[in-house]
Amino acid sequence: MGITRQLYQLQAIELDIESKEQTLTQSLARLGESRILLEARDGLSAGEQRLGELKKKQHDAEWEIEDIAGKLSSAQETLYSGRITSPKELSSLQHEVESFKNKRDSLEEKALEIMEQVEAAINELAGIRRQLGEVEKSWRQEQQKLSDAIEELKILLSKLKKERQQALAGIDDETADCYRKLRQKKGKAVARVEQGICRGCGISLSTAELQRVKGNRIIMCDSCGRILFID
Ligand SMILES: [Zn+2]
Image 1 (cartoon, rainbow, N blue to C red):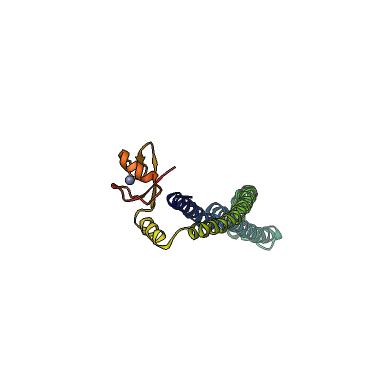
Image 2 (cartoon, helix red, strand yellow; image 1 turned 45 degrees about the horizontal axis):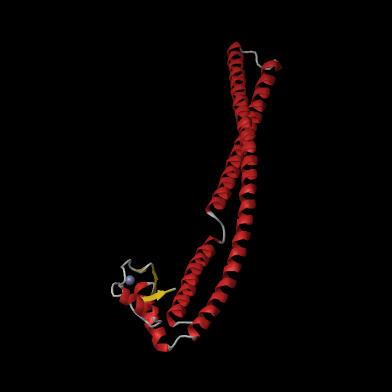
């Protein structure tokens, strides 16, 4: 195999390694908990917190109703006990009973509203749990796929690195060094010649240059300085 072909193949292997290493890095970064999953979990804890607050409100309202019911029944008991005879006191007690009743009614209304809110929050939470379940399921599947892809990439990379070693073994040190410097400087060290054009920079080569490139020696492009390779 000619030296320029060897270099061209070495470069192809190295570019493949670079691209796969990039994919590997991106895949590794995607391992772990995703933003959507974290958001869904936040949604669940917000829903649970809201339900907890509403239940506390419900409990407080029930306690207030119990309290006012106690006061009402004790006022009613006094009112009908016959112990109070003063019309002024009786009238005032009657007012008190009325006011307790009104308070109780409005508290019961409020408790009913809270109960409806609790029911709505329970339903909402069930929806959030279902959604989180779906998110977690697809996240687990995605993570599995990702882990499989990562394993596959690692295997491919180790294979490519062996191929790279083999390709390098057939190239003399001086040429390898020249190639390495060009790679560092230009990204691609070897440019393919197609239809008389250097694919590294797009310049047309003269017939004489083409002949020299075909001679399987290391010839640099006058324009971009890359090693020219013709198939
Ligand atoms: Zn060129």
